Image 1 (cartoon, rainbow, N blue to C red):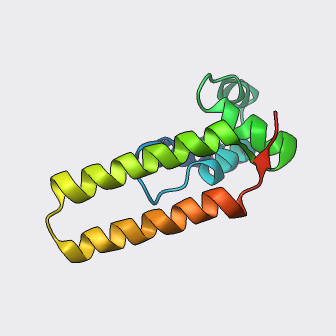
Image 2: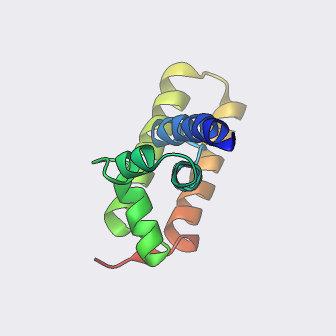
Image 3: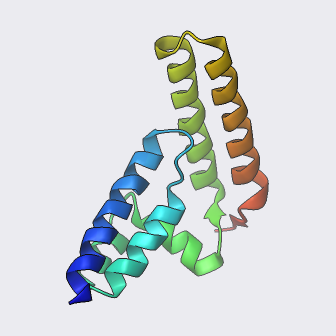
Length: 122
């Protein structure tokens, strides 16, 4: 009876994880780890599909194996985050206060990704 609920919650979590790849401020790895945990309890097929996914599986494998992210994953995440911040701040948003908040959030995200999340050596 809980399996369908876990599948729905896992899919919602997966959606947030995918959005987190593109939108600064939304984390990716925690949502993907939650998705993996929910899928492993509900659907072996969905769990295996997630782990074998060319783009998303790498996040989970690196974190599960070594409790961290590879340098390449960190660099990619920080680059995407700052690209989206610059697009948001200089194309869509004209309010200097909000732009300051976006840049501050980007600095915090960079510090967290760079120094708090362990780097996996491959």
